[in-house]
Length: 378
Image (cartoon, rainbow, N blue to C red; front, side, top):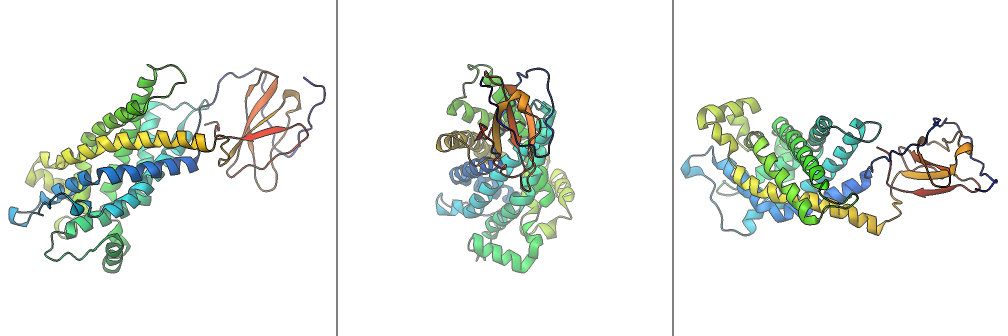
């Protein structure tokens, strides 16, 4: 190594010292931007393919409470099976993006210093991600979708599409019209995400043990694992989904006092098995949606790596400098940079991950090398 050392700017934050070389590599953390883009793409593709199954599930659940003469007719397969589809494509794209970025962020918050997260904490991360997506995206869009489908039972339907229905609901019901069934929807989404993410993560880890270290699972394997996670999710959460759909129907305010009253009426008057009404069409959708969403998410991440191999969009940089010259480095302008000493490279340089709440400042010094990357310590 040359005797000429770069001068490191002394700008205010102490770097923790270390007496031994760390060989532990931090786990990769996807950037929020990439999580949102990959999740949104996966969500849009998934619902565009599987919407007829969603239509069948919703209509089955709405018909359960109606006498035979009043049951909603089943139209010939075609355009009518996509009633409310635009609503759900927009909503599903948004909610999938929110779900994945929220899950990644909660998982990061609940992981240990080495970036490892336990099974129970994975469940908690999924639960919190589901609650977040329900508030931000799921409840408003699903409320509109359910009211559009339920409106078709009228002799002359009033709602002509997503935009028209949104305006009509806003004028007649106010903001509350978009949050019908908020509690059961939040419970369903939280349970869905907790079950789906934890089962997918566990199954993926089990599958990874059968492949060469560092080798990625095939698209078919990812699809299959996502499909199995979908099956588990359906049967674990279907009663909540049934209550959610009933509470979002047009007549819900007249029929039920609240979500618990709805649950008890179904239990007492229709039987416990009615809580699983719509499970078969939902199963058909979630098995495929689970496979499509996770496969599309993984493939989108791989595509981003190909399109942007240097990962310039993310808030992380790696700095390499001689170990004995690392003393203080940190604040430039208004941004505080937090340093974590990770390991030494083969030349005796200490590799430092610098992360910030925004794009980090470019710290310049003679001989100081830096690159932007997405591989932030978790």
